[in-house]
Length: 442
Image 1: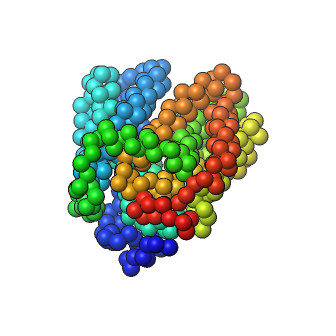
Image 2: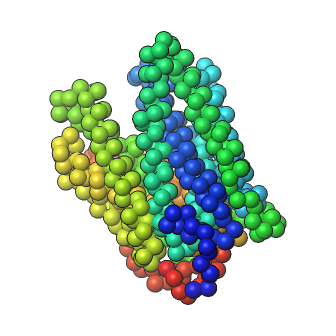
Image 3: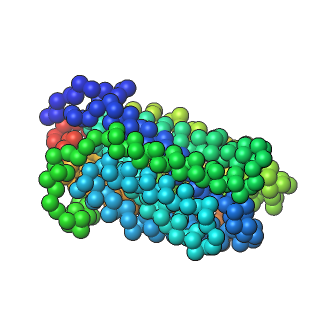
């Protein structure tokens, strides 16, 4: 081992030299608030379309799909740029910029008076979310020593889970509370957007005050953004980085499938074959999603610790294989309102969080220190391609083949990544905290 063990720890996670407890606390604060903001916008969108814009229900599906696609295009075009920019100006300013941009979009959302304005603000929000998403993966690679990055990623998964649950149990309940106190639906929606915008704005201030300042390497960075980005793409010559890019495609696609198609499958089957009302079917679907996310929340620290005890390439292969088993198991379910769906939901939740953690830990280990932000930006870009594939191709399969089609697609793609991983795993040489190759460790 060539790296001295730092003295400072955040819980079970040992910190890189120069990283303080305040820096790490700020990062985990961001894992909660970023997911809180990320998940709020799409989940609150039906209220906006119905109560603020008064759009007929028959048109809301197409508009929602267009908004989602637009957001992913903006992320696709900007996410690499944010990673490269962070290598030049430092992580905290990019992180803070992401939160500020999202705060501005959320603050302006109640002023929407046309679909064009709605699309512009959705694109603005996506621009900010791309910055924050990239920094979530980059900062943890900067702060935790290589041997403890699995545990650090497990805690990140817990923070993300808390943020998502806060959306369900706090943010989405605010309109009901405001209306109960005499507000109109429009006022309730307006106040809710402003509160979430305030959370994002506060988070931006916390990032500037609490994250570490630019490192010496970032201060001395003279390369252009384009050159840094090209180096991030070229880094895929490293088989470990290539495997993590492929795993990012699978793991982010997996998350998109759960959010997009799990509830839709339960609702469409329950209303057409199960004799359930739309409200009852939606409640059942929400229960299934809740079980999957709870399984992910509970298993996150477990797989994080496991990632620190295993070779990181092997952990990634194992995680993708777990996800493939979970998603493939949907073929065993003919009635998604039956009890069997809850077993499948647990398997999917475990597989989804395992893939996210393992791929993140592997890219953190393999990314060269001087272009880490750019490499993780390309890693996030691969995840965006996964989301677009899941929603695009998966949606076609859902409508024209089987409702399990999106799940089966990513189970099959995951198995392809597993086979490739097994073929190249012995060629993966781990790197240390500075991104230099070393012979020992994970």
